[in-house]
Length: 187
Image (cartoon, rainbow, N blue to C red; front, side, top):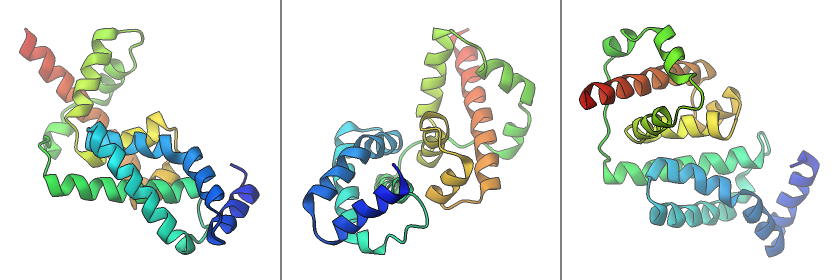
């Protein structure tokens, strides 16, 4: 959305125009919902949390300073809302220690993850992603699925740009570790 149009829309929302908020909702609801479902892995919870996000956004629209795009601000609210919900439920996921991650050569990661048109590999990747921590799923979703630049992902998740890059690197290795583990179990 053009920044001038975005500012006008925000001003209309601040002035109490319900149609303006409806427009914002229409433009961003699907993307916000998609991020939340990646984190919570439940359609029902994601729908409820998406509603919560837009209620919070409406209530806090006056605090939006315009330092980032409205979508970045909404993603930040969505990320915090979903992570808080997941933490309350204490999800089961696995964590790899640094030594295990470092033992996976970068070349192996690239070879496995850069294969094209391999349905079995895609299924393995999907299964591996489901085992990731909620924060890791959100990071992958924002960067790879939504195509957000590292700087915007860092803003949304309150990380440094360098930290985002390191986490993406480690997540790729974690996925490959899981895929290799799955392959060993089926043999």
